[in-house]
Length: 183
Image 1: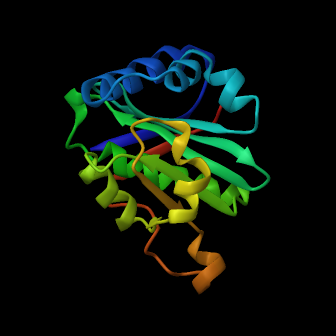
Image 2: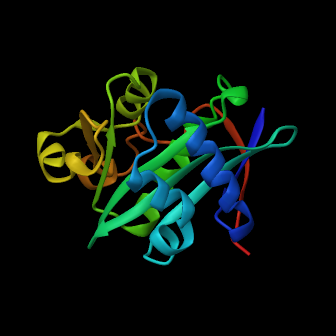
């Protein structure tokens, strides 16, 4: 399987909304903060210095997405990461997360955090696998943003901690065919 990782374009905004609404409504209630972000990704994420990435399968089209949303100077939230139910098991989430972490390194992000819920155990395992750690400070600072949040995690680029070459947070085993540049 070869996935292409694409950057946000306005024509992909409906896919960002649909993919995230599918998983959120399937497990939780779509909250007002969710609605605002899903309906205004350019204004609330891209135009404020964030990034939205998409995974595209050659046969299925756009199947997943993830965002890096600026929260402060050098501080970003990894948010709205989801894969369509029909594409589960294709490791698109792992490819998206690896691409997002690579982009975070390139952008010089010093603190990357995420908010989730313990029912998302497979996602939490993936986050841990790629270097996220549970963080009480992140929970105290940002955890009230969503009623469903009961897990907060932080990622720090390993190149800052252990020197280059530590592969714990390097790309996963999914072949990514290309990273399409924004047009």
